[in-house]
Image (cartoon, rainbow, N blue to C red; front, side, top):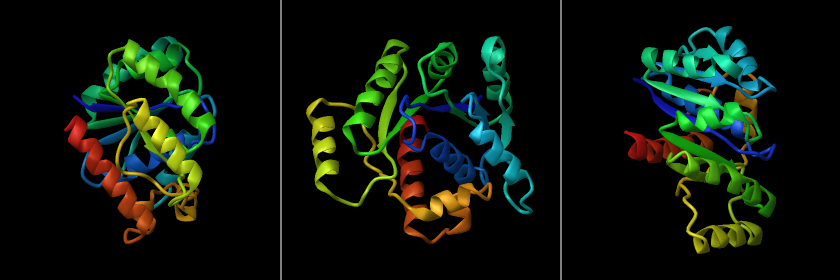
Length: 208
């Protein structure tokens, strides 16, 4: 049965889909990985279509079924893969609840800004209501700065769960996504690739 990682965030621009794609691309050479795109924009499905045309890219499965068929699709994909990564819709609706309910871990990407943190509160509350483990992760984050420090301090003050690994604002990540690839494939020795590997190591420590 697959480990299910649901990437969820109500605020646009936090890098939810890019994070899901990079996790899948990083895991694909050594695991049977699939992505489930239930975000209405279907950006992850478009990334997958680009990937399918890349010779040598490790295979990643795809489904974009949602609505009344979603529960059955989650069960089907769990049985046929090692890891399933779900890109959830940017609002709390029935599909989002099902994606969170079926997760072994809910990842909530956010840029270090108050609006991102405020938006993340609803996702964390949903995960808590469904009794699923959840972690915030800084994404597209500047290396330092007053605002980042203030948001990090607020997260710590409130005891909100956050991963130690962070992902910087790297142009190479967007360029890799536009080719249907992940940063560990296009620039494996880059700082961005090292950040992604550190994040994945931390995730594996949680879900096994």
